[in-house]
Image (cartoon, rainbow, N blue to C red; front, top):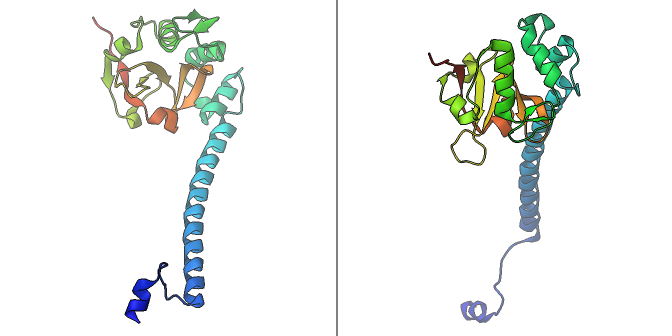
Length: 203
């Protein structure tokens, strides 16, 4: 008997059809469980995007009420009217590297213009130089007007800057959409945030 098994060119598996059916059922259930988990994950991720999209259902805000919709806060919480009016005026301005006008503006150019107009402060022109003058904060301690810095490309060097507003939202000059309000907790930004805090003017 042993010799007969050893001489077979194809291995012999002693599996009954019932065991085989049970095996297939377990495999199918296992695959379905993995699929369910991924479906749930993607659904939750999509739902979060939909919530953000709902809160941002304004192509170009024309009033404080529409800004408050973007931020998902009450209009009464928008204390610094000049800040939000500046954002309304510049919202949607296209991105242009080195730009500093409404024909096109880059992230540090927009930040410079906003700080000069709203806070009467002159910032360095380049985002990494702005970051060098910022007192660090935890994200939970950020206040309206604080600065947030990113390093895209895994270089560790600051190459993008925005201005924090409220409710984890910040305004910046995005390379793809121009001046826009974005969510700091969105993976695209949250994963690349490397510094944030208050600007400290040198004496």
